[in-house]
Image (cartoon, rainbow, N blue to C red):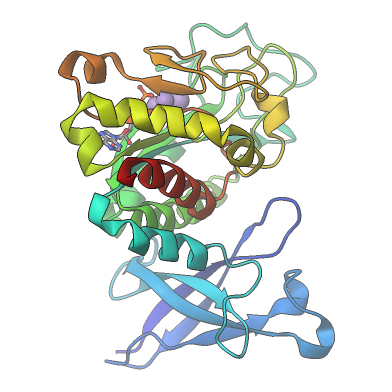
Length: 333
Ligand code: ADP
Ligand code: MN
Ligand code: MN
Ligand code: MN
């Protein structure tokens, strides 16, 4: 039987790229081929030379279609097979390979917000719900909106074989989180992108949109982040390496923050469990710091750190490349 492969790629939308996908019917027994698309329709090429190349980099069972059908994460190449300028995976792959000996691992907490009729899902029209306080990890129809979508998305990720490690309702009504990891830099990044595609696709069937906007509602409402938990073998074995990594991140703070997602200054205000984007800090248990050392890690004198700065709309290929490069360079010195 021929099977369906849904090729997923990252487009050239400015300032925050979007996901695109299309379906290929692959002959019985055949491997996933290199494919292509019209880059002039995705802000990736001029109409006069519109062809862009799709090269499969990760595939998994398609939990929506089932059977032998698959989802395929593809990277975008130019027709000479060099990485397209929108392709951030290639640079991530190079850094991951360079530091593979340090065994870097990432767990990413993907936050997002459901939207319906132009406002966060569950919000009253023309007004605001009760202030934040009861929604985080809440239960009950007065606090929780979209749980059926969340459950369907979680099941889809599990069926696809992604490394999803948990979900929770967030501080703002209509906002949620799931975590992918711990996995290697490329694995976690490929899987975050596929899990985002599944989120949009699953929510589509409920006639609800999911957004990664880092600050969907101005004012006294939490933004949406992608806290990035990180460790190397040395960090999992001792506390000196934990401190070395925290210090190293401080030395390149501006470069990191500028690459952690469009609109980061709207979210990292110093309020709502964030550190101001202009200042770097780290601390044990401190959810007002740029980087948090979990209390258990201080107690055990080993483990991992949480970079709380990345936006929900960040590119995980960029974030994991920067953290790996900054921390592993310092740790090998
Ligand atoms: P929070 O308390 O910040 O909400 P979560 O439980 O949502 O934390 O997320 C923690 C993440 O850290 C999970 O994705 C988990 O897999 C990941 N994690 C745990 N141990 C490590 C480690 N040693 N290295 C990297 N990530 C890790
Ligand atoms: Mn979390
Ligand atoms: Mn969270
Ligand atoms: Mn967190």
